[in-house]
Image (tube, rainbow, N blue to C red; front, top):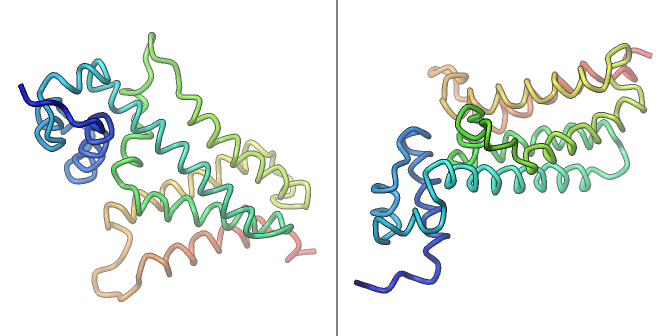
Length: 201
């Protein structure tokens, strides 16, 4: 039997991410993943146990990278909490567009969470990153009259919905020459303006 490559685990994850990006989460099977990764059919079992094990690891990696991308974008915005929240929102959508395979797995709650599979800590960290940024903007006056929890859900719902619409290419009118960057700027910018009470003071 041929010796498995030392990076078999990484190959399996990359093959799964590619397969999800092309065909969706339900397309992941050990046989197809093994074929794409160039490993034996038993190797995925050895590393992950079952296909849910692969998906949880993909989601774990995705949430970690997403939280890092949001925080890095916020940090680059400087001391303005409004701008930090805005840039984190832009980073969210850009991550989704650049990492479709990860993104489609990350929010498959029925697959990733069960009686014996608790929610991923990395997912909680992503929401905590958003909540911290919202809290800072709220203290500066953003969304006056709304709670931090409500603003957080509003921001997440907006950028997540926008991400899905762009991934599925259902938002852009066929006859309009508008690129993703312009749409992201328009939508996230509009949300930022709606939350910015400084404009109405």
